[in-house]
Length: 293
Image (cartoon, rainbow, N blue to C red):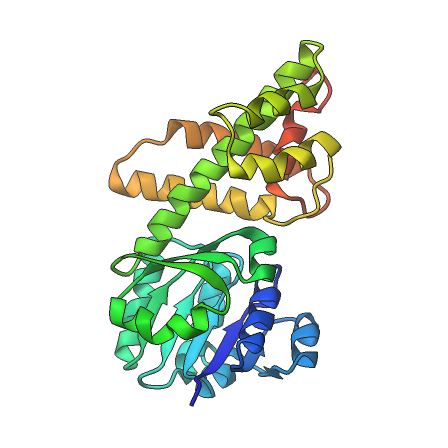
């Protein structure tokens, strides 16, 4: 008999992930702090729980994908948190992007309750979530991953086991650091080309034919050229991830000067934003009046 799956978090990623779990034939229970965000998924066949605790008490596999460490702590701990309802021998999988230290703390809390844990952050954006083509970066025991492979495979093409608890989060932060720097570099290069009087799309033409080409730039370059920044990967979350990477660098004694510089640029754009933007909107840093210091 197939496992009953629970998913906490009905945001940009959670909703399409939930729909793919349902398409995979699993019974699904969902929870979101704002219940209306789950309407589409409930209409597709999921059951709505009234709390994270209620959800966990009904499920063999509990997944979470929320915005940041405080949100994860809020949905896991406390009298109505998922940990309070977690079944013995169940598995908790967190696909949020948080610190490795928090992932290890969750793993310890699960072990105290006789449950298993995987930190399994994802990459692929909303388009990957919708197509079921996410890449999971997984920390935890290989045996637990194999138990959960049928569920995770409904959402992702590649399930990469990276090591012990926290390893998935380490790699996710390192990868997002690279993505943020690549997009920041493209925005800066486009500003230079425009400032020198050359059409910005000419740079893209050359990038596509050169070793500087990167898949993320294929996605983000059109947004920058058109100045359209509807969030696929929100800038506020990339800003958060850069902060987590810098925090980890400080903890392990690895300086990250390029990351620190890029975060200043993301910080400036985030501070001026009045709407939720994709992180490609870092290009706005160079679109401000010439008076910028």
